[in-house]
Length: 347
Image: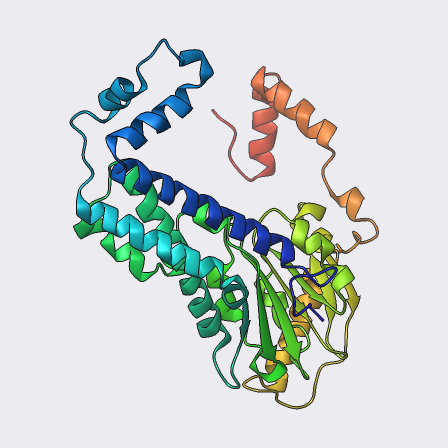
């Protein structure tokens, strides 16, 4: 099963957690620097300018005058500074809640799609705050247009860059609530979902999520998630109990669907409903998995069928003669043909 603590050896989401926390810390530093520069005294600005100019400028450049030139005529409005303050405070709070942001439990009979959407909206507060800081630093922040970013961003509003750095999320869900079709809405950028399935589940639910650029796996151990975490793109993996199909769909394996699939366990079709899935639906998932992972075969031609086909060489020769006008029938051949067809010869 997936680990429940990021320090656990082999935890599949520990690395992405740390990377995301580091990104948040970098944004906090940018905000603090921006606020300090815009609220510092003339002496503090001169000191900061001198530090940035370095030892080479010592005695050659007046740091105070240099700082004045950089800030002449420029004053950040109080509303912008207040928004950056708010964004920085939000990021500090969110940085301390990485565990809550990236590890969620789906309540019994709750929609898996809704639970993941809610978690992603929480992460969207990070991206909203980061946008506010960047817009303020580049003097592009417009309160009426951008102030809403501090209210969080649903996944649909994330930019490609934000989707690319999404942290991996571990989701604990009951087997009977493993309704995964809606997760396709979120499989974009670098998003990775690790589903910890408790109890009997539909045998091949994740098969329907496999598309050419998405890594999909149903696994029984953490060791099977190494390729999942190294995949550069969206991915979803489920740690499933005994009795479920075990497979991986790795887009790196080949151009054709059957090449990308590797099935190591294919159970029998269940005979009873599970959650909202009937036996027919569960059987269809297994059938889909079997079809997607099977190399296509083509029937051998019937005996003698090769002889019935026209000889390509003869066809080419006939075409070349026709192009040269050498295979047109002469007058005598035309009369013979007309007589054979019952036509009267010309007078």
